[in-house]
Image 1 (cartoon, rainbow, N blue to C red):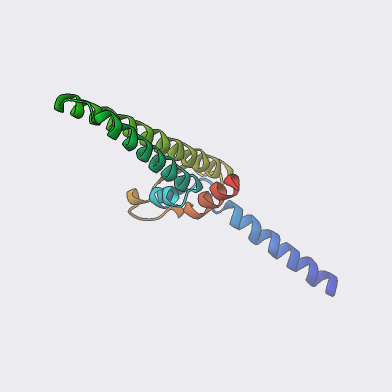
Image 2: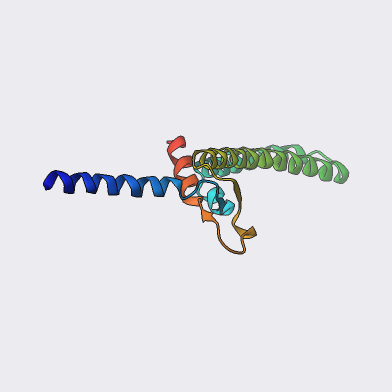
Length: 141
């Protein structure tokens, strides 16, 4: 009797596990991109890099501006803003690319048909934001 009960319990757990694993198969998922971006481990590092670069560039700019005309002054400021903006875009693009790769991996792993942004959902779908976030955090630690 105990053997039968144990066998039934194992079978029940196996069936529930299979149902949990298959609940995403051929379904539509969605993610909150802003949450993934804000909680991405590389975000803090990118902010520090950008802040350090801005500080260094400001010191450099202040030294150069001492002996310039007003026109040169404006041109130098514009060049520095462009450099800083370019670096910011590179850092953001790296994080977004990583997020997209992890979304693709989770979607493939769960055999999902489509994954969209949360703000595009009107009704239904499965929120896989936490699954993607767990994967990002585990791959960066």
